[in-house]
Image (cartoon, rainbow, N blue to C red; front, side, top):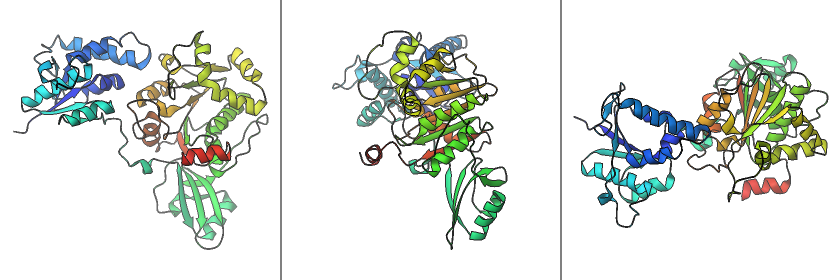
Length: 429
């Protein structure tokens, strides 16, 4: 009879995804006692960390009615859950036996001595390295990973070739049937098509059964001149009210934030939206600044500097931005305070979305009400949050999972427009 797999869960996994405790059907899940102690320190925190800690604690408490957690309790999915004491005798001499990670290692090594098929599951890279050094199997929590190579991340753009007659037909009718091309095309995917012989090219977007011409109409009060084709693609996603979620990735200085902000203002001037909501994951680059004084607006001020910079660039001062904030037409909403809110007829901007987990972004997206649009911005090559990477961050996962929907769209901006130096630094350094 094949041995059941035993998974020892680290605190980082349970805080990252509260439902991870249910995610190992047909296996034995071990929760080390020290993990319960660590969860207890997070139960009063705001946002998903606190919610996850409380959920796991309540779930384990509910299991007590079914039996004894020390002996193990079976769930409906043929999974069992057991709380295990650490054995400091199995902590290698070079490791501090009082450290939480090392106590979890002791649980794994104890189970190994019982000839169990043991795997420690943790989001902590260094923890996995330590386990490997001790010949203890360890792996990341893969439920939210995108199972593709990093070079295959959906860009929202496809390059094709065609006869010049097809390109001529496109310009005559502003559209062609997408079945002309024997390739898989996703809704709202952009098509760059060049002639296979004579000179000629076209830019289009997949809409229904057709590839249609790129269009974007901004309010007359907003003047934006896209500098490359990807910026044209971005504007067509941003101003289209039928697209409820747009995502943009790209290098620093590619125009993501500026184009999004100008499109949001255009929509507000045209009465399509009543207000603009701006939020982002608060993850510093480099050293922490410590606690910031003041109210929420004061605390968020350093994090929304890119928005203020774009207002200064567009309108030559920031007083207009401050006025819109005072009138309630622009609201800064910290990501941790999104739970329970509903945004109707709002243009929601999530900046630095690559630093948010899929669970954090899901919290924001499920706040979107009637008549609203949400835009996710980020650079998946610049991730500052521990435990997530290019393939496991929320922005990449949402882009991949929603690419077949008619109400979503994505584009990757590959060319920097901030300055020659900024573009050089993004590519070379």
